[in-house]
Length: 226
Image (cartoon, rainbow, N blue to C red; front, side, top):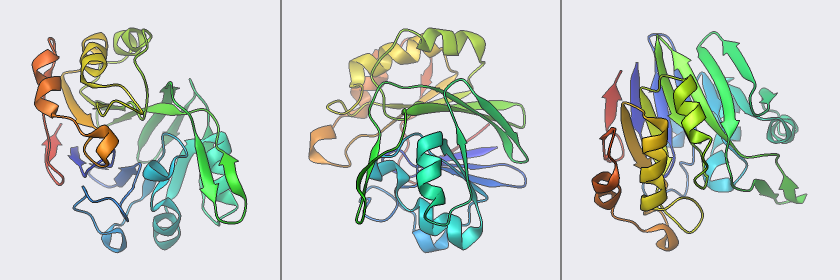
C-alpha cells in the first residue's frame, strides 16, 4: 500500500488494485500538487461536510463513477448531486472491494454552503479508519483532542495516522502531539496546516513534542509505503 499526502487534509491511498482519495480538496488548495482533472479515484472517503474537505468530490465521483463514503447526511446531500454515495455513521464499518472503512468520532462541526440551498447540515464529523492489505490508516479529520483516542489506539493497530495541527479550527501542535501518544500509531503525519493564515504552524514543533511514534513531515506529493 502506498499512502501519499497532497496538502491540507488530502490523502491518497493506492492499493494493488484501487485508488482511494480522502477529503479531496484540490481546486482552490494552494498547498496541493494534484490536478482534479487528472485524478482517477475508485472511491472517495469524506470526514465531514466543510468545503475544504468535500472539495472536488462531486466532479471526481461523476467523472470516475467513484463510490463516495461519507457521514449519512452528507451522503444524502451528495446523492442529490448525482453522486453514488454510501452513508455511514460513527462506530459503523463497511467492507468494500477496496478495503474496510470505519468511522470514528471527531469533535468539530459539519455543514456545506450550497449556492441554491444555502447552509446544509451534513451530519456529525468523523475520523476514518481504513484497512486494506493488512495495514490500517487513521485519518482524524478535523477534530479537537479527546481522550477516546486512546480507545481507538488500543483497539486498532494503527500503522499510519494523519492528525490536524493547524490550531484555530482543530487541534494545535501541543494537543495533536498528545493525541499521537494516545493513538500510539507507528507513524504520524501532521496535516491541516499552512493552507490559510489562521492555521499557519511549524510542523517541527509538533514533531518535537511527539514521544511514542515516528513523525513524518510530508511535502505535497510525498508518500509512505506500508
